[in-house]
Image (cartoon, rainbow over all chains, first blue to last red; front, top):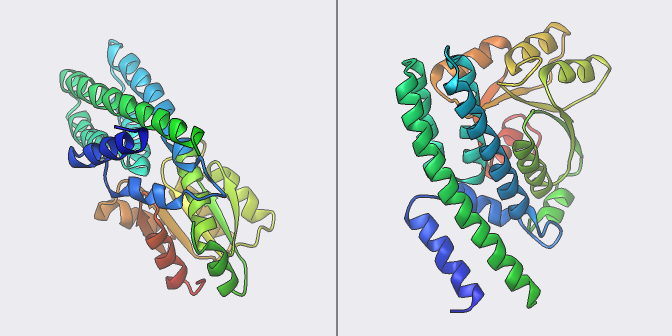
Length: 141
Length: 134
């Protein structure tokens, strides 16, 4: 399978499995010759935000007394960042995370953090593959 | 961004929009959307206090889009302070939290409308049409 077909298959799979939603298509529509790296820019910001926020959440949840308001604020940020890139699964888990946070349950938050971490790194890996394929395709144009 | 140039040409007047947003990913998206819609001169403030300062210093805007959760000063307080200056520019609150209580809190602070994040071309066009800026 050539790179273009691999990219199409990858994106189709990401939509079919609910990793991405229609917001990602909005981003693709906003990319044009005057902004050829727009999708890559947004995806990169999402990946940087996600890694930073997950790190902050892990630190907050390790503390003897958890500041659930700060936890909630970070999850809110990740939810917004996910929504902007169309990362549907991560966004939905952030919604669950905030519900658990309202219950002030450290165990619940830790379990949901594990889930959001797994989903985020799974998505990040696929985004990295996507960007590599796009770069490869651009190299042949 | 197909059609951006023609959309800009169709709008005879350039409008000035102040985006009050602390997170880069949302600013990048908003910039692309404004460009796609065309005819928008975008100014940005990284928090509510900066937005209030820009307005106080005479920034004449046709529309203010304000995020809720920001460092230094949030969108609700910024909206209250801008209204206290006697400014009647349409203010639209933005947040990924869009329950009735979230909308109500922005409206009570003095916003004219509320739009859930993420911002899209459709939502932006709706806002511009609502305030006769399209």
